[in-house]
Length: 200
Image (cartoon, rainbow, N blue to C red; front, side, top):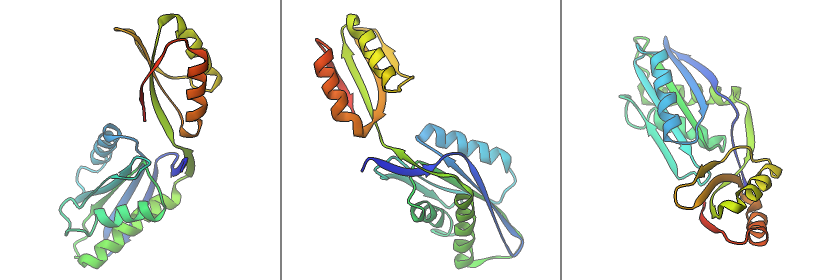
């Protein structure tokens, strides 16, 4: 597998049942830091909401996920939100649904349906895109070869990388996983001395 599906930009959804209002927010999310920032953003928008329930699935292997009911009955909020992320076959997505209680209890089945529908609406409104899975590299090479590596990365369309010149020159960058063999071949052919410190 060299691609996965995610959402391009943030989107919103809404559902209402028996005067309870459910506002859903979907975000592209690639790590715990972006999750925490997006969580705080929505909480700040709705400080008086009865519940701030959410789910996310991060990583192309889809093994990093979380679902939170925030005080709703167990399994009635976070799980159906996560279920919609999985139903759309997405990854690197975070969805929060905030609820304003309308005075009438919905019961567990009603809550499951409400959180599901709100999350579903947010994803229906989202722009879903297919993305290439990226490999993350760290290459160590002599200073005299750094420009050759930079020029190669630019030709491949890489315009951002990090540099560490402490002991040896270490350059970190990412490229589509499908290009792994080609990149390895270029390194072996063009750099007199190098070490792949990390390739994930």
